Length: 280
Length: 319
Image 1 (cartoon, rainbow over the protein chains, first blue to last red):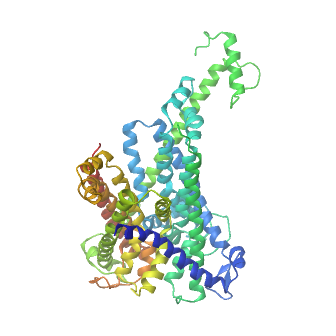
Image 2: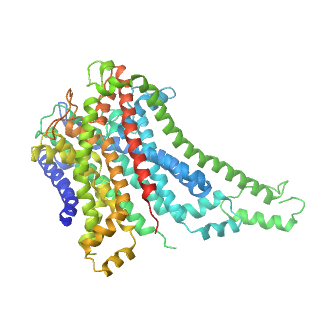
Image 3: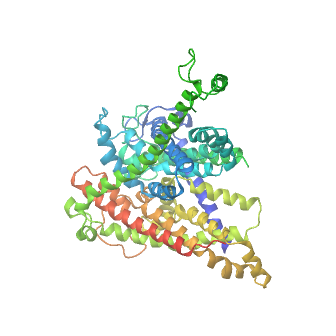
């Protein structure tokens, strides 16, 4: 009985891989793999059709990159503050408040990006259209920030008290203890938290669908409208595309690539922790 | 350090240490003040500066949260009244409501709970209490950790291909609940495992010593002690299910429903999908309606999380 329950999670993985592979394989019999991976134009919904996935990948990475910069800066700063500076009482209040950010539904963040951050950015930057990847990226960074701060702080708290005391005894300031002792010792945990948070940002759907636009765009300009892989999947599955057609198969190929990217990052993140964690 | 009290030799030594360190501060002729004093002032100033910077990161995070809440409240409070809760969606923003979405969310949450609780808790019990410690068990464990990191939209594709099409459940509540079950299952399993692990081994040993078999130990010793932890994990997983839009968007699509679902085979919509629908409408009035929906969604999630925290504080035991 219980063993059957445990089997469900195994079957889920098998199901995901089987379904994605089957449809992706069908897609690659019509569109060559090489054209898909290296093509710089993505236009399956228009004539002439083009199936180069790079614009979607670039859009995804640009959005996740902006989110990563925001989350790493804020998250690492917050983690250092909480672990090295904050009195215990303050820490017990601030930590759960920050973690609320991780529990807010993504559709709410999408609304926040569109109704608050985008107008704010438009008042200081020349943003041509309302949809832009900068706004979506910033909000996504806010969403994944608690992931970085919580996991990094856990790693920092695990650094032994004696190492800090030794540095303080040599006359180091709190900043020097934080940056020269604690952060280097906790680096595997910090790197892993960052990788896992980035992977979350790459797979995030609603914020980028709502605020970043629906124009596949091979660009590094954060003020432009782009389309991420996830947003494309939503666009097709909500559209009029009949199931079984070549266009419908594209969402499986894109999803398979997304699955591989996030899986690789998650495995790498956990490997970093296992491989590089110092035992004291 | 007072300048008058510092002998000249000390100054040179301190200066050399500083110069051979990471940050040589001054490389010109002998400074008017002692190098040690200048250096420690610089280090103190740097310490203060970065303290402010680190604190600012926390403050920005909290300010972002505050801005989000205020933004939603100012946009939505005006549209939030009983008729909003009790109306079906409409072409006119002023007459739109969340009645269908609210009932859809209740259906999906109950359906997800019905599948995810027995399967998730069962898996956790099996892995912690029954499974042999071998390669296969470790593989299952690794697989669960990886499933927790799979993007939610991919669960939507799985649900669409498996439940909606292959099982011919169409875009029904049952298909939605099953999809959501697979999505939250890793959370239920991992949190339940933590709760079961927290029960001390001595308790099991005592029961075994009295002649109980493995199943009796689980039923009478482990589960009663692990239930509060498992409960708060289940609530956490269900609040994730309530807020999740991407897979539900794929299963239910942007359907315009003017009835309450009455059986698991009916079509449905849920709060986050309804909110997404309103957010993407260009007419200005719908922004207020979307915010009102968000207020309801956040209120539901807030109360669920409060219950989870209450359960944890009320029943948490330290051994």
